[in-house]
Amino acid sequence: MIARLRGRVVSRRTSGNRDTAAVVVDVGGVGYLVLVPAGLTGRLTAGADEVELHTSLQVREDSMALYGFPTADGRDLFETLLRASGVGPKLALAALSTLSADALRRALADGDVDALTAVPGIGRKSAQRLVLELKDQLGPPAGDEVATTASVVAGGSPVAEVRLALLELGYSPGEAQRAVDPLDPDGDVGQLLRSALRALAAS
Image 1: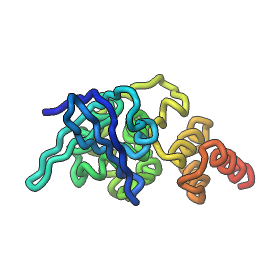
Image 2 (image 1 turned 120 degrees about the vertical axis):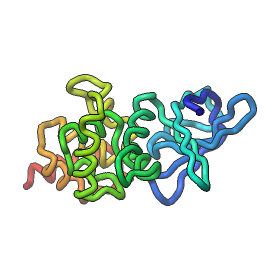
Image 3 (image 1 turned 90 degrees about the vertical axis):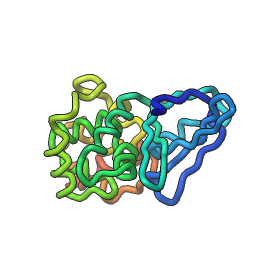
Image 4 (image 1 turned 60 degrees about the horizontal axis):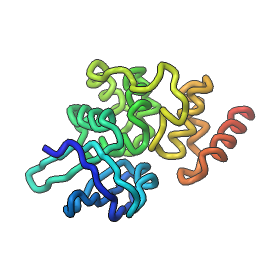
């Protein structure tokens, strides 16, 4: 099993689905195609210095795919998600494209269904089932007891970053979700956060 790769990124790609991204990592002259959380490609520049990815090789009857994460914790959480009923690699990767590993652990541990439903493909019933199945299988978040927004949501989407920032400021999950629902998913985090705070102040 391939558990870790260290090499140079020679190309990267995204698709119309913002939760799908991939990089080709050259390791000793061999190019490995690695599927990664969408937010990660912006931090991996083709031709830059060496990168290290913690990987999970997933073998199916008709395919074999390598998934990569910036931390071992992200990789381990990805594999934990796969143990839940109805969760395949695509959905597990979408979860880690929308929320960081720490944020996802917190959502599962706290039963935060609103946070989990921010993941494309996860509805309220699916989120509740994930909480029931995985809550006791997960350790505490790797960060501090009260993490900063940057550490909680590194690699997440801008809207997910804003939502977690609002939660850190003391807003309830419902308030945070209502504030981020109308936001542009491709906007600047700072501007989106200011818009969300103005909306909350006016409500």
